[in-house]
Length: 221
Image (tube, rainbow, N blue to C red; front, side, top):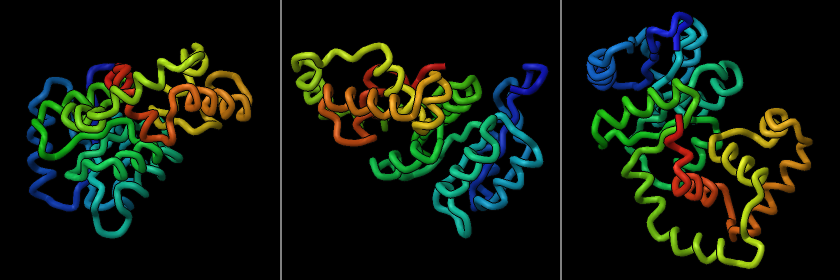
């Protein structure tokens, strides 16, 4: 949110001019939202964010030159105050996992209704996360039974600290960032993560993301 709290400032990143034009019309039809910059590739996006310091970047993945994944990693490192919402046609787990690891706070499919993007922008600008509703439903499908089995194991209940660590991992934070935020050592964070994953029978980050979806964490604001 801008310094006076009245306007959300947004940069659009897509290599198709027509797509950016359509997105701008949708975004600026909302009260309190303004597009302050546009970019056609990742490198241009980084420059625009440096110049305009927006609240949110709406980022495509597949672009010439620096793609959206690399640009997201760069922005996460250089401009952490700006949230990144990925807007893409790619909905498979591999893309989702990599972009969340890179630091994206929102993930929306281009084929979804425009309201998904608006909700994602509002959630991310408020410091939350957002996962496209159709994507959340899909990645959760077939997982509930497995999660229930894992949670029913002896001693499977997570401690408050283990839950905190998983929630921050799902939000895209690194072990080092989590350690700083919770005032723990990196080693302690790794232990909490390992214990939580063992209790729940998780094998990787995408399992943590699915768990976060079930908990409602990725729509928190």
